[in-house]
Length: 424
Ligand code: CTP
Image (cartoon, rainbow, N blue to C red; front, side, top):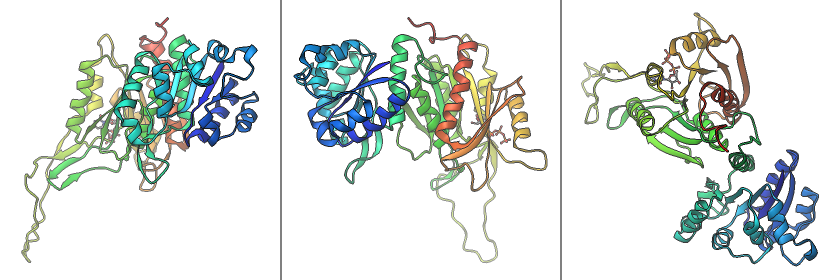
């Protein structure tokens, strides 16, 4: 694939070097087109060495080759990393005052812009309007990540990781052509619901019954789906991770709120996959004390209350029961398991897959020091009717998410024909 990698003048220009490497290592022919300001951050020799091609920022070099028209016309993808507020403004107004903005005007292939700037610039009404205009015209403007910015400040505006940018760009090409350019399991046109984190069941205004789920795995599943082109509704239970780019996040607290949120999304829209990553409390206090439960100061009676619990709905089981409609979602369960005298993790997982009746069960072994809150994990992927177990890890939760979609994506194409493949 012929790629034009535009680079505009922000400090994140150095991260475009990694994007360039990822693209060239994947076999793409990349021409780098920096702006003059980008060359103040990273010089032309770096781009030329990494791309193996000459680099220019202006239209006055190689005039007989008409690069200001040729580059855009011949490209299969134009990707700009980082896209500064100034570049977004020039692009949205059709200004063509250097080689990159000329290329943007002549490109008829997918154009993907990965913005990076300070939060104030990203949220300024001018930038918001420019981004809206570009998106209306079909340009893909990747949501910036939230996190540490150049100075001491943090917030939305951070350049997403190079791997994420490349995936988003390849997904944009695949959407246009209908041809997967990236990993198997592309989710273009699919609507995915991911639940993440752990529910909290309030006992009184200051206390709750909760669990140790951090939400990292669910967020990784959501991000990976978005990068493969899915529309993602992320239902987030008490997670302290910034909202991931490209996901529609709804925060809920309790199991019953989560159940209602899942059913709301299902009622509003066709959903292709529900991934129940969330650790849902099986029980909640039977009664909620409207005021703080106090201990008594009686030396004889220690006054410790007995907390009565009642069952919460099993959300996944409820979804399995509702099966049979025209567009039944593919259901993925997660199971945090420990081995015990009744069997090891896999034995418990097989029994749970049978009991839950979902289409895929992702089982991981948990203990005090493993999985919860960590960035890595080991999981086993089990499907009904198949003795085959795919074991992934120990590895990063992002790779586990990719492995999950590598299984679910192709299964969707076979089991639930939807927009994928129907597109021109
Ligand atoms: N789950 C759910 N609703 C519940 C409990 C769990 O939807 N009330 C979902 C979880 O999100 C997960 C799967 O069911 O995808 C398995 O969760 P787990 O707690 O391991 O299952 P349980 O059936 O509660 O089994 P156990 O008896 O081992 O707790």
